[in-house]
Image (cartoon, rainbow, N blue to C red; front, top):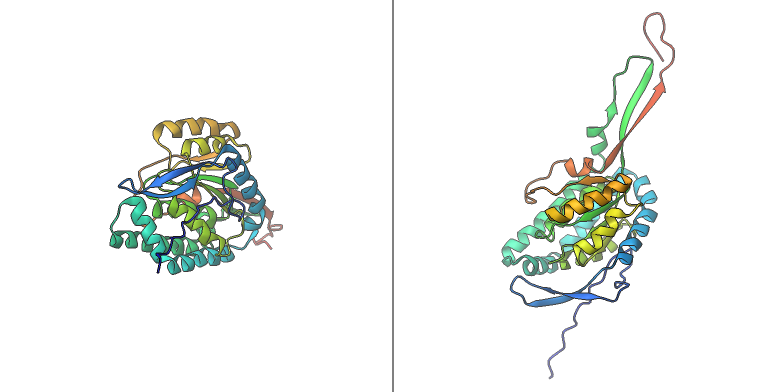
Length: 294
């Protein structure tokens, strides 16, 4: 009996809930830590970046308008689906980061737990950073957080899976939509995550995943007038400075790169970085002689 030919996987981008190839038709070789060829990944172009922005903007209204409880259910569903594909991601993380199988499995477990952690925050963050403000007068004064909008996320270069989820999950947990630029050196876990997102009740366009040269993709995203914020986690010092300058043109929120141990339990900083505060005044009624109001 002849040996069976292996079915090689064709990795694709994830834009608007679909899996297109790069419009440029370009690919680049992805290798493991020892230089062994793993796959050809799409080499995204500026046009792919612009298409991802259009998809993210289109999805923003529905995702930001969903209840926080519903968003939490969707994020938890992602964790459920990842649990079922744990072995696949263990292999991909081991290849991408040069880890042993046991260490890669620990990274995947931590990543699944990270999704669950942020799923639990979706309907609680508003209570932590919002609330009633004491004012001198017959008014209610209430502050509540709202999502910033479309956020470009440059995934960490070295932490191809746990780091990726640690910067992506807080963005969508708070009602934003995202364009993710995967690790340039190790994009395969991000491209496989897109397949999980597509089957996890995440509406198309809420997360868009691009692979390729980080600087080539990030530059048009930083300058794009319909991108509201950018996380520079995956940019080096020189690129980060260039992107900050480009982002200033439409006053984007910018989260600068900083040393992070992604294995540690995160705080709420990455959620609050992409929230705006809306404050509402409302009259309580006339004050009576006794000081009471209605």
